[in-house]
Image (cartoon, rainbow, N blue to C red):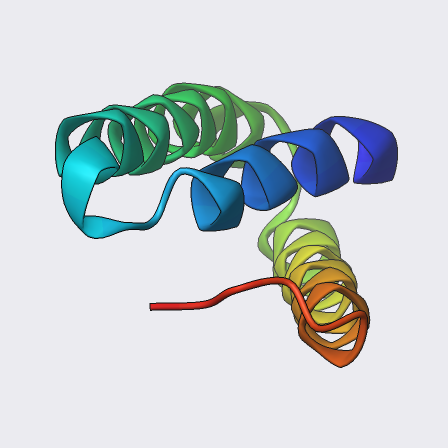
Amino acid sequence: MERWLKLHITATIKACDERKTKIFEDKIGELMNYLDENLSTLDKHILDSFFDRFISVLWESILYILIKITSDKVKVC
């Protein structure tokens, strides 16, 4: 999952410039839809304590990816 997130976050940030606003919005939408659908399913099928831990790990991974991408001097909005 970390690889998938990194690919989508990187694509989203790279798409972020004035000529590509629509692409940026589409990529954010894709990521949010994916997370919404899959996290809802996961929440319904596991214990709350496991889900909370999973969400914590997920956001830590996203934060790590964003820090890595921005430290690599990728243009950010």
